[in-house]
Length: 285
Length: 315
Image (cartoon, rainbow over the protein chains, first blue to last red):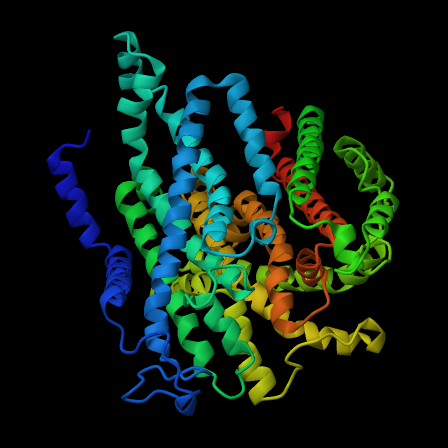
């Protein structure tokens, strides 16, 4: 839909947006860290060094070592893969199921729309964390079940966003024109409605991605996320808890990793919204 | 107005009913037979069957569902498999920790966030505004359990001002009980305050752009008066929505925070019950939390009508 000139304008606008630029830099660094960890980490995450345990920062171990003498920087690097994978796949689940549901409800209206809204009410009635704990407890702890648990709660979020923006698009003139030219509801949805809401979906995706990282950390912290020996930021914090008096650095760095990651994604989302969503832009200016 | 209320109430009841079915079915597929778990590995088949019969586990699914839901309606939550006491007793005992915790956190987050939001909105575009919102942006990104660990390190381990965890019980005195809820409440409430402050600010800014605000200013009202009398009142709808959502979040957030501080609250109860396969306790607590969420959201919906007279006419 968008002409190349509009894209160019958007891109130059994006790079003059402070939130977007900071968020983009943090997010790219996070992804780089995850990619680098596939080939190289300062130490192997499985290498124990009991004599060198609970050490603070040094030139050998930039972020110190944990209670088994493992290198904390290496564990944070490898743990980022876990956070990204869980959050990303649960966003894809939420969008993959939620968006079609929302589009369908908006296109059909009536009973289907009402049913979707009530389904949303039902899912929202369950505090997300409580249900994630329940789901992982029922099906067993682990990364896959954490993904499912977080993904389920992304479904109504995407369904609501897609439904809302589709409803605002249907009365537009170009949609009426498409209908008049004899195109069916499904075809109009795919050709005209969906491309015009991609901006909003991308922004929502960024927000849910950062919420997913927080949720995964919470689940791992209570022992329901990915299991050892795979390092995860949440479990690093759990292990740090009993050592808090002896080695506070064990709690500091994994937490900072979470905060910086979530902050970066939120800034990226805010920046994208400013640039891509004309409605929000008007309200803010 | 009446139409609006009755529709919201009806939806609330139906949602609760649907939720009960979901909870029941979900826990029905949990692997592990409670009767066998209770009796241990060495139990004879006869003993297991006898206990199953006594617990009503041999009844068909539908019968069990209706007897459970019928019990809930008259306040009978069943009897815990592991503690052998009525679930209701367990819940009332634990709620004495979780409810104060959630309420203090909500209170903290509100009294911090609304003034901060007002402050920022009134100074929009200034250094003070971007500084405050920068801090809020960081606050949103902080996981509450990590914040809890930092608080424990600073105030309990290093300064020794408050206990690092545990709960002496309200019998030990109001202050002793309150003292052990201070850090957990801050850990839960502050990150929420960051979210609420951002919502308050943007809701106020939306309202400040409206024509009636310009009219109010034009007729000579001071900036401050416009902000408090007109803007804040009209910005209440998004603020109330987030407050309602936050209460639900805080109640669920107690699951993790209670684990950090070893507090004997609802969150820890449900967590332990899940690991011990004490399904009847899990069902009871989850239904109670879900009912609370639905009730709070209903109250928020109804308060819209009080705040915004335009909604009263709508059905």
